Figure 1: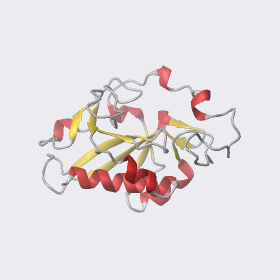
Figure 2: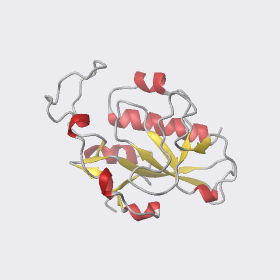
Figure 3: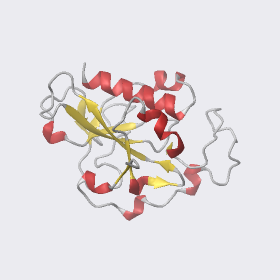
Figure 4: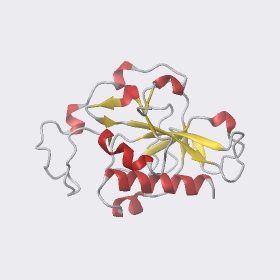
Length: 184
């Protein structure tokens, strides 16, 4: 399996306006190692999780895949993974989660795909409500018409910013946090 997941797993069409790259946002006009406003050195010219590092993350998360339509210049902007349900809160024993990994300098945003299988909504809320300052969720999953059900991660930004400035370490730490929340 090559790890590429078609967007039809989201059960909706893909919006073309989300395909283009916002050149100002990704800093194409900057030198690739120029410091960001927060003082971090950017080594990635394009946003998202580097495909070349996906295998390292799959050691702990073997179901991890990439939504093909959200792949650009070797970086995945949307990841999909099955996470365990050890509390019996889903009918199928797992949460299917899509992760908006567009900007790894900021805490990723995760959404539940199999919301119809969820019996208890402890930390799962309808996206786009901006209930908290750290809520960057959208009303629909990016690039789709599918209603978004956001996994509220709490104010995880302080912990996230202390993680090693490495995409595998950051995404692994984030996924571990999400598993803990869903099974708390």
